[in-house]
Image (cartoon, rainbow, N blue to C red; front, side, top):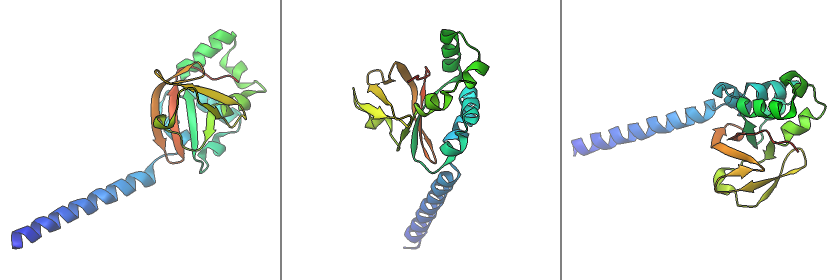
Length: 161
């Protein structure tokens, strides 16, 4: 009986340890902005959020769903528009462009339906399509990156309302 009790106690201790590690991980999870910055591929997005004074808004409790264009996506947009990054950051509609990438609530890829329309914080809709998963004409290249205040879906093009 002593060996069984010892085994039960060891198993119980392992479960408690695992539970504490999970809760610690949840507490230290970064918000959307810090998660994007840590990824290293969203420098232009971070600069744009700062310029548009939206950093604190996306650090708020949320939850938010962000369709986050990579630096490569911004480079593609700059080439298409024939402008520089500084010219993009100086646009009067920069805030609207950025808010067009944000949806209230936490929407995971499994929640998306083909043809659904989702209202963004820019008060305009984006259209979702599946197979492959797209937001308007942008491909979702990495879905469901969790942050403490929402979820990020990495996209390969900047959404312009």
